[in-house]
Image 1 (cartoon, rainbow, N blue to C red):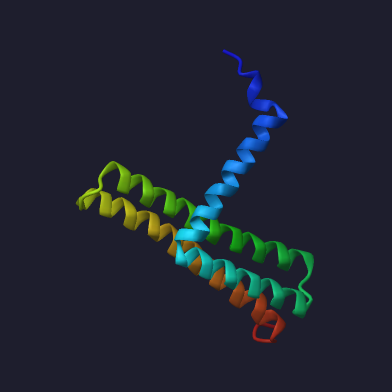
Image 2 (cartoon, rainbow, N blue to C red; image 1 turned 30 degrees about the vertical axis):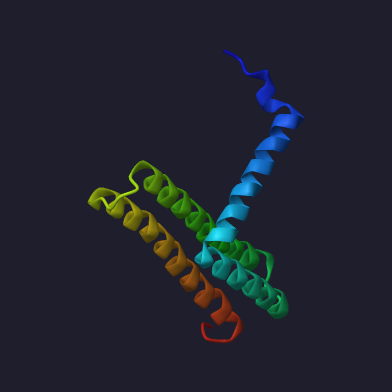
Length: 126
């Protein structure tokens, strides 16, 4: 069955609206996401001030987007698990912990990238 309405400008606009509504929800409800966004803005200012080249900028932006994306996905997992099982359940707790682990891994990776790239600008790694 072909769904021709899925590629209409109106449908695309609704999809973008829904996606941004989801991001706004995460911004409104998740303190960690707000902290990560503020950190990303500060990193962006520092990158601009230090004159990062295109490759350094791309690498750091990738790390930032990865952290923010994993935080959004973690929030979606938590909300889904809370809806499926509103009471304490060990398996649900394990699933939430695993999703949170993905956030921690992305943060650790971003910190390592930050140390390497920013360290280069501060003559730590030459």
